[in-house]
Image (cartoon, rainbow, N blue to C red; front, side, top):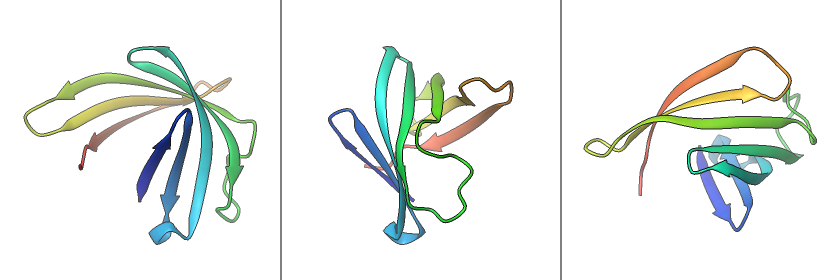
Amino acid sequence: YYIVYEDSIVTDYVNGGKYYIKSKITYKSECKWESEIIEVTIPDYNLKPGHKIITEVLETATVDNLVKIKVQIKGEDEETILVLEKID
């Protein structure tokens, strides 16, 4: 899994780059943004073009490069909390 940022477009690659999800990012604040899915190549993936995802950074740890984020599909109640490690 890896992510490529280019201007306001973010592409999440999975399965060694075989499949991807391409999204347009709109920043709402320094720590919050909305991603609108514009293209998906993952077979039978539950999110489709037009879906919007709200992501918010909750905590960061500079010592070990960890970031805690909250992710929610716009219009749904369920939230997911993830802890990610930044790799340069």
